Amino acid sequence: MSELKKTILYSWHKEHGQIVDFAGWAMPVRYSDITTEHMAVRENCGIFDVSHMGRIWIRGPGAFDLLDTLVVRDLSKVKENQAAYSFMLNERAGFRDDVIVTKFTDEEWLLVCNAGNLDKIWEWVQLHGKNFDVQLENKSAQSAMFAVQGPKAREIISSMTDDELPGRFRAGWITLDGQKVLFSGTGYTGEDGGEIALFDDSEELESKALKLWQSFIDKGAEPCALGARDTLRLEAGYSLYGNDMDEDTHVLESSLAFVPFAHIHKDRDYIGKEATLAKEGKEEKFRVFFKLVERGVARHGYPVIVDGEEAGVVTSGTRSPLTKEFIGMAYIPYTLKEVGSRFHVQVKRKVLEAEVIPFPIYDTKKYGYARES
Amino acid sequence: MADDIVIGDYTIKTDRKYMASHEWVKDLGNGKYKIGISDYAQKSLHEITYVQFEEEDTEFEQKEVILTVEAIKASGDIYAPFKLKLIENNEVLEDDPEKINESPYEDGWLAMFEAIEYDDSLLITPEEYKAIVEKELEDI
Image 1 (tube, chains in turn orange, red):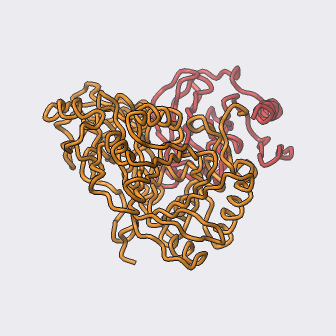
Image 2 (cartoon, chains in turn blue, yellow):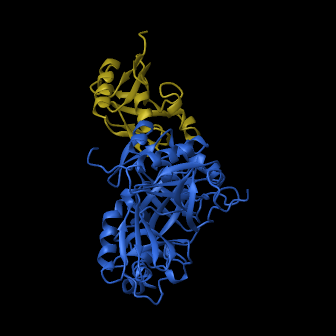
């Protein structure tokens, strides 16, 4: 795996976990086992190394205009210190990436993108940045980022700082365990908590990151790897770039083109606008969240069957570690997209019935960021 | 009975035959056999979440898939060691597939079958299976 990229915590991962190739990165898939890590996040607190994701600073008088051109969300509605999830599209209205843009001021923004898309997105931002008065800085390699997630996450983070933690989808600089970090009330598990970014251009980055990581573990956060990250995001109904959508997925057929993540009719001529609006009312397929009515594990690439014919494809699937149901995401004919409609999935040697369900899979009174604690 | 073979974290029971594809096959007498997966196989698959069984009383040719074991991140097809008729699936696994992780050689057995045409060309001894596991561990 010598050719794979590594995060600053690679040595720790190698010592404590099983390493796999994830989008060109040598990353841990599990430390203990996926179910234990998964349940730690649903019931207590887990910490993930997400340093492999990209972090690009966009500063200058043209920062807002550049970003508002690159993403489909209306960024004029985003307040200072707000973290906003959205999508960058290509000219065909396919997904370049799903991203989080955080606004500090009109002239200072942070863009966080997927690890596997960093090179592509960095080129894309530089290409379009030429038309705007901006300074761009790719600080992905000079920083570390951790996602601390779960019902106890805020309590643990708060115990390491005197500063007040920004709320959900809010961001700000705090001093954590003696180090200045950016805290964002974001994550990708469905649970409350946040993501913590440590920027440091010096050679001390590794030791500082490791110290912070270890502090969280000492305070009871379970180290969690990509396997649990995948089952958690699936239970929550969140999409994974490369699995559930890519450059060829039209945004209007993705199930993601809704406010506030996407304002497809915003005034700005964002990239992909023409192809987005041209598709309105002409969608042929739609991505849905489903559960199998019968037992079976649907996986990426399995065919969707309607009236005996192949009519779509499964993009993700697993057995929910929490509810034990067999869940997944699939592209199916647009006319079947409503909750409750049924279709079939070819699972190995069997054709199993599936039902479109709302997400998340769990009871939101008991689990997730909106739980009644 | 010879002692079990142990390689690191993995145990290989010596009271049965194996296949290079990591199944074990135990002769129950009267032409009946049980099949399961080795300790090494269950530890490589990790947390098993589901077993896709085939209909009992179905006949299978040698090397045909007779069931599939699904784990969170991987799955494994189980092959017929010879021409056989499936007589019983281990239905306990419907609700407790993790039994395969807990007890791969005993409670976590997968299926029972009768030989239609016994042929031992795909079966290997515990010692031969040990060499296969050692080779795989070297390659990791």
